[in-house]
Amino acid sequence: MNVIIEDKDLELLFDHQTSKKYKKLSKDVKFLERLGFVRNILEEEENVSGLSRYSFMRYEKLKGNLSGYSSIRIMSNRIERLIFTEHEGGITIKLIELNQNHYGNK
Image (cartoon, rainbow, N blue to C red; front, side, top):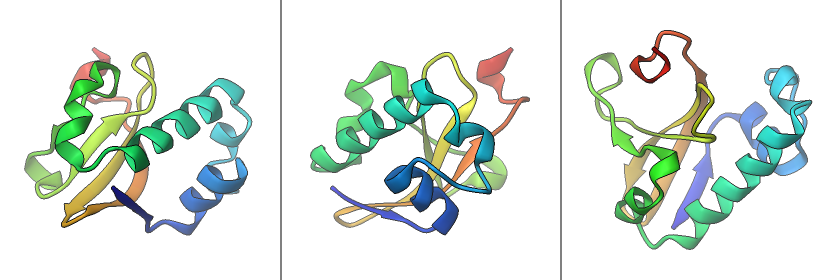
């Protein structure tokens, strides 16, 4: 599917493994490897319905104040999620969310 990255700092993190906004993440080698792996999966899948095959990603459509967005985890044991909108032919990634209070972290 087509993957558009709306946040320029996030795009730098994806493409060059560096970003001032995501400085801490840009130094985490395991995270960067997994981010590249996740990007490959996103680009190889035909559409978002294929993401449910990857249980570690925990693909979900969000509710509440993030209604209209979807998310996936980058690593199953970490809090970072890619938040994105779905559209015909692909997704638009909005940001990496670092939510310490997410229900999956309790």
